[in-house]
Length: 198
Image 1: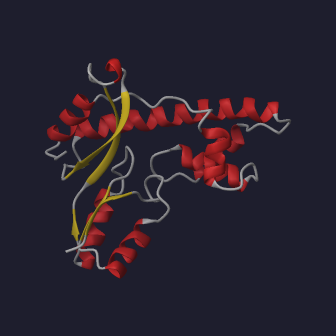
Image 2: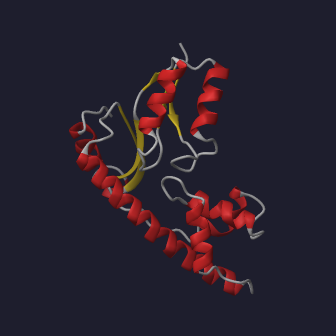
């Protein structure tokens, strides 16, 4: 049995393949069970479950959250960022949906601040900074959780970077802004409260 439980979609997050492409590739590769684990988004879960059922594939609801974790014996208790995978939860759970809504709003505000930081770099380089139309164009290309890869792809489209990696190397790493902090304990309680597994 072939299983893949860590897949991001472009339909609802920052993956490179749509749900349709993911499931077609799963069939081609003989994957029997899969999980779409988009960043801070469960918008694709219902569709993914239906498609999996139509194709006779096993499906487990999935989600990836970025959490902040600290331990007094590691790095002097300084918080570190970890990816937290969750499975088999009720994707209609009100508390989970409310938290993901807050995270989505923060992602948009974070993206605006990142663009402001990038604009300072562009001005220093004698290039035209982004304006509101650019933000609208980037948002129009986002189906799910807004992330830095969407900005990177737009920078490639605008010929400001040669590739997504180039955009990260030249701009997005140094122009980054913090994600909304979610503690490991909060994420764990949220997923378990929705009947899920971590």
